[in-house]
Every structure is written in C-alpha cells, then in structure tokens.
Length: 129
Image (cartoon, rainbow, N blue to C red; front, top):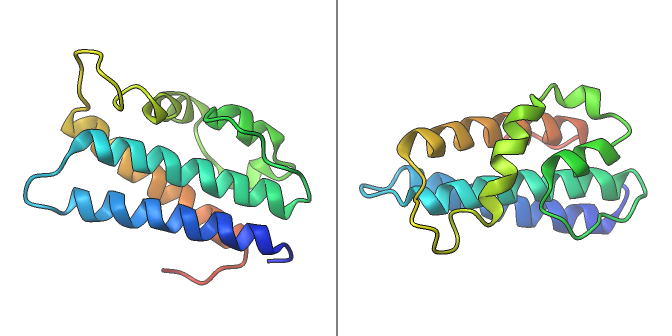
C-alpha cells in the first residue's frame, strides 16, 4: 500500500470484519449487528481502495456510489444488487423501525462481505487472513 491512510481504512475494516465474525459464531448471534458490521467492512474496504487510488473517500454509506468511484471496479466482481441491499444495513437495522435483521440476511451479509474483503485485500496486495 502506497498511502498510509489506506492502511488505517484497512485496519478499521478488519475490526468490523472481526466483530461480524465473532457475532456470527456466538451462541446467540445478534443479526442486526452482523449486518451493520458487514456493511461497515465493505464500506471501509471501498474507501481504502479509493484512498489507494489517490482520491479522497466521501462521507457516505452508499456502497454502490463508492464502488462507482473506483477505477478498477471490474476487478471486484461484485453484484451491485447485493451492494444496494447491504448499503441499507448502515442504518436500517440500527434504529427503531419495528424490524430486525433475519438470520438469512445476516448470512448473506457475511458471505458478501467475506467475498468483497477477499477481493479488496488481493487488489491491495495484502496477504490472506
């Protein structure tokens, strides 16, 4: 990584990934938290990639808007529809709305975040973790 801020974004993304994984593997997982931290992991990896390209990441939770800023977005091989759904997890399950994340939504979030994380780390030249 060329940019020191990229490393910080990656570190924050990894923190979110660890929390999501820990929660997913707990005896009583909180699906709202899993969905939120998966969204945050993807968002921060996108911002790391944007930073590494020499751009300043904007303050947004919109994963598709962030993806569209990337010059090498094709390398991520990610379904935009999935990103649209997961973008909502930044706030949707965080505040009272009378709805909670389901196990299926949490499972999908873990799968998509895991795939995105793996691809982003490869692009950034980071070793597997």
